[in-house]
Length: 260
Image (cartoon, rainbow, N blue to C red; front, side):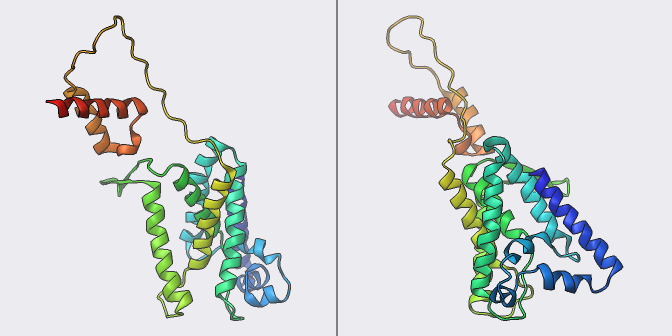
């Protein structure tokens, strides 16, 4: 994944250098590498790959968000499952995203470029793999923020679905025109790649075995201290963070309290 990020960063550096030395470089780049309905109809199918190598030089968030997805969720998937799966998700997301965008855009003057569809594929694959993992972030180093990959993905997909309906289906004017069809298709591609690869489920900590020194009925213990600890953990990191042993302890405590 670092190699992929480095390749995109190097291509962006060439874009910036080219535009600084040649004013027509931007229009030449888009006319040569960008994905357009006219080029597709002319048989320039290789643009389905080249359009992901160029990004906006006036909006650094365009490339920045792509690199964040590659070095964040993409790198995490690579560490856990190996580099082939996230790379396959990224490439599949780009291809499916480009094809889906072409399906919604048929005017000769329209243009699409960037690797955002591949970024959505990585985010979707990671959100399916680790849906309830809690991340903490200090906004402006002051405001604490907690979020889960599944919640972030659902929020993004909801926004993209809105832009798809308004901008690409109904073709209404919008302040900006995100390629929602490509982004949604990229997310679907990431989900498909992860499902079809059928990786082993994430590892969970093994429960600590309980030693019973003598046979006989188990005395009724006061579960309040352990129950308080587990409830604090649920409040901090969510129910999905409990280990199998903690889930059994919670169920046992619930049964003991219900008998009183």
